[in-house]
Amino acid sequence: MASKDIAYNRAVRLFLGTMGVVLISACSPDNLGPDELEFANIRTGHIVPKSSPKALIAAFDSYCVSAPRAREAADRLLRSADYVPVRKYGRKGVRVYVVDDKRTAIARSSAMCIAQASSRTGQTYALQEYVLEKFPHAKPMDTASLPKDIEQAWMVSNPPAMVASQRRIEIGNYSSFGLIYFRPKTANLH
Image 1 (spheres, helix red, strand yellow):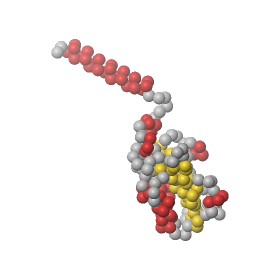
Image 2: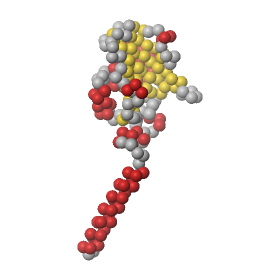
Image 3: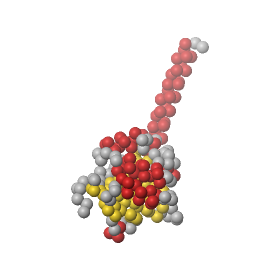
Image 4: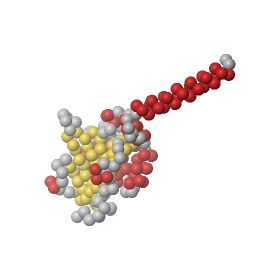
């Protein structure tokens, strides 16, 4: 092959490669960064997955109760565990994180964290056992004054916070179960 042909073939490959990048960029939705593109590939059933009670409690403890309170540190912790944010910060500073497997979805703000999964057997009991072990001095709360989807709630003292479970009934027979850790900036919860 003559050197002219080799140079021509290289030029064509370079042009086609460049055009491919331009075309792919042109076909991508505007303003989508790497997080949004990764999120777009997550299977729907993994967004709020059917996590086992043990996995739900472990995620709640790791990413809500024991996690750093600072937004940037919590973001690094979740990202290092392969979670991606659904979008930038939403209402009231809440950011939702999901991962493309059956691990629990996590929603965080500066004062609250929720670990959420589809309802499964054993979750309520697992939470009760977790609260007894992790917060032995927790005080049960009357849920009558709380939102209607709160099933159980406890006040804990170190640090001052509320631990609660939330069950949301969706269309049909589907329900989700969330574990809430609420620690307001002002420590006076009583």
